[in-house]
Length: 348
Image (tube, rainbow, N blue to C red):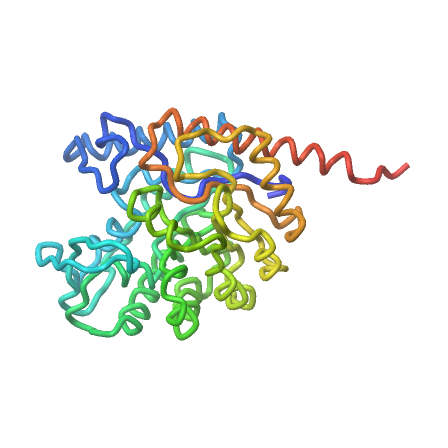
């Protein structure tokens, strides 16, 4: 698209209270059968409408048709038993009961393609679709079959590539892989994580993105962040690998974080999806605060490669807070667009 500094949402938006319990991750659906399908589509229509009227340029589904950004994809795969559960350490920071890999994993049918077609038909704006990344999928399961994180990641990468190609055929413009695990398992990122991610994106003509954040604004994540010191420098190890990778867009957390802004310089040449909205606080940013974050970033990334966004998904927020943050993102971006337009020399 030709819009300078196109805005977008990284992941989830809160679901309507008639569809799922508000402000809750993994919230169970309140509807069943045909009513659930209709409710999901209605929620998707609302998400599209709210993004459009609040000035979001690259529209997403807001993850309205799924309970969770990882497990909803996994539950559609063969080889994973959701009844046989084990407790594992997620992202090396909290324990969770997860399903078990009991045999070869496979994708017998498309998972999100019909939802993506619905999104494509409902807007003429560019659309973005998110998928979990291979490493993050591995980190959300107990593996009793492959017994190798790397082997399982490569299997997931091939499955994700199948889904991504069908999403592309459905009209998706940007396919984003979510890899919060990249901020934790730094040795694995170097050994096989980036390679598995590239396998998931192999052969795509649509733009590809990888989102690497410090997690939803839940207590387990905020407690972990408090242990990371005055500067969060995990990106310093992964950005050089991603800069030389085939991935087009790198999505990172910035607003109210301790990530040094100059680390973006390590991505020079790539598009940068910059988190200018904090998802760990219900305080709504002012447009000027958003603009100031973008101004700082523009010292290290060219304006034609900067995509303002949120730090992560906003599913745990009250809906009015999340929507107000979308408006702040657009308003702050408009300030910087106008400043950039005034700085361009006029040709007489």
